[in-house]
Image (cartoon, rainbow, N blue to C red; front, side, top):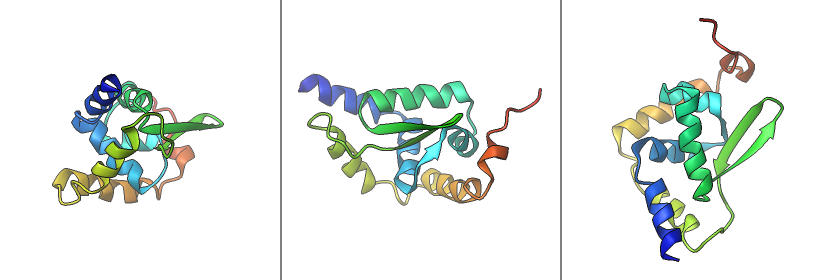
Length: 121
């Protein structure tokens, strides 16, 4: 049980991961949408999503070439849903979280096929 708690605590102890969780409170998102909102590369976003998934805080599903993430609603240990519940009641007045949610509203208006199209270098 202590190990489960520590895994959860470490997962939510990073600013980027908290930002991702706050965005996923709003809706399911694909990696490309998170990259667009957070202005981060695919490997960075995927690394953070992997940590959140291992902690049982997010779930993913594949749809063609896209992978979509959402907050977990399954109890995998004694703490994952408690951490999500705590987080849902916090940080709504944080400027960075508010900016992320504004970017989210713009990002979801874009066609996912255009947004997730590989960029030419």
